[in-house]
Length: 413
Image 1 (tube, rainbow, N blue to C red):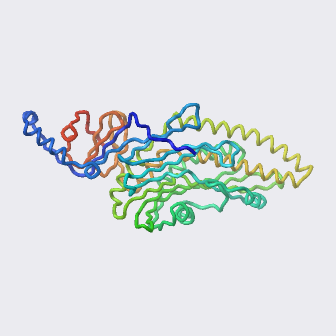
Image 2 (image 1 turned 30 degrees about the vertical axis):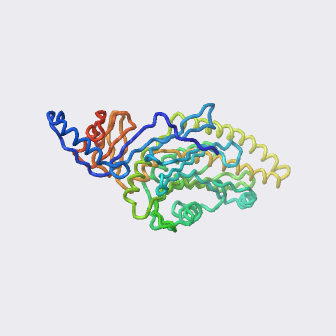
């Protein structure tokens, strides 16, 4: 795995002001008055970065492994001074846990605030007893393994909190139906492809949760997780029955940590961060095309294997059954490849936070941009990357920041 540094050139900046800021409206004559100009400079100097406003910088994660040249995979806004690690890893076809995986973490300079976006975790179960015995002999990879099915609530309680959050205590947990509905739309595409590859019946269920947690050091946090459970009936070529194969995926595993008692400020930051995740469509298109081609080639190869295994069944029976188990394992891997790819939908990031706080949509020359609704007014420089937010109706960035480029944005219903 490889970590990719922040691109230092062409940083896109977004400024979000957190307190009500009053700036006197002046007439044209007063603007030319030296005393008035001096007062404006003093007023601007009264605003302290980090307390009265936050400066956000865009961090960029680059995929240096999947293409002939490095390609930006995605970007996100982070408060100034935060450090981050972002990586994109490729696991080659046939490796046992094939796919393109992304992992991201960032923390504030003082270490009190942090966010992690963990890669998808995939686990499988089958009704075929011989297959379960065979799976128990296989090596278990970190994020691809064999276990009983679990929905989002069960996964967070039994696996995520004790294993990945170092036994953090769950204070409360609520379902997130908005995210579940978003995941369902992606799952419809999965269902169509599975049936194309010969699955006779496909049933996919999805669930998502938000949870408040607390650690032993008294720090607090919020975790977000979505889980899909894919149930597929596959014909058993050796006894004429059907086997039920279940694949679960825990996607969008997000952990945001902050000091005790600072949830309100933390949620403002989290809203900005999650709402700013942007995937490069050119990169995503290339990733999708690669894995679709792999799945199609594997499907053609599997058809030939099935025919060969049927012949072996007639000749040597027991050996063919083992080969059939191997075939089912290969098909299960194909399903997991597809599901892992679906975990990159940017809209799910925003939908996680929408159930916690309302997110207003403002319009500037670049189109619709989601911004934190904790503020009543938004300003843009018109470049699509720089924004100011404030609660004061009298705030004027041309006075406070001595910059005439800012234009007030309008809310969109």
